[in-house]
Length: 214
Image (cartoon, rainbow, N blue to C red; front, side, top):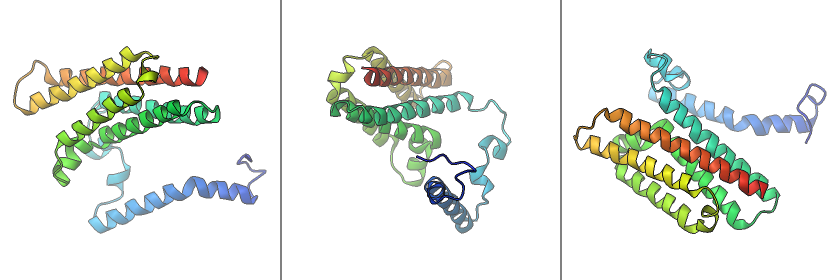
């Protein structure tokens, strides 16, 4: 692989590298711009930070944003560990485990970031949140069942704790929606979720490291 530098600027491989890097992002920006034109939505509504657009306080959503960082780092480590494990010719079961966990984490990160199950799907597509809860529950159980030989050799208590905490956050959300009052309900719901994210993050980082190191 050639370095992308001034010395190599006029080489064909350098421009091929630029094309690989920037084609998809440029097409994405063009697509967003076209959607904005068709919907009469200015580009800044897509590009600027929500706090700037809504003129909110800097601390609004801070814990939620930190939580998304935990999702993101977990997914990045899992998928990069998959690449390393593949190059090391690790057993296929370990490769599938890293892939499954990485893709599941990416899905939950995107869902959390854009509030798919909270807002987009129920309001715009009339799909109940319960469908997502069922999907994630099935995915997590499948992860544990199909890869139990791997999980049981790791810090699986952290994994179980993450599932319990994230599940408890969902249950708390459902209880609130039913109109039942809880003491300091948002501290309960979002605090439990945050701890679940930390547990998920630590478990998969430690597990990815062990797979690569072994």
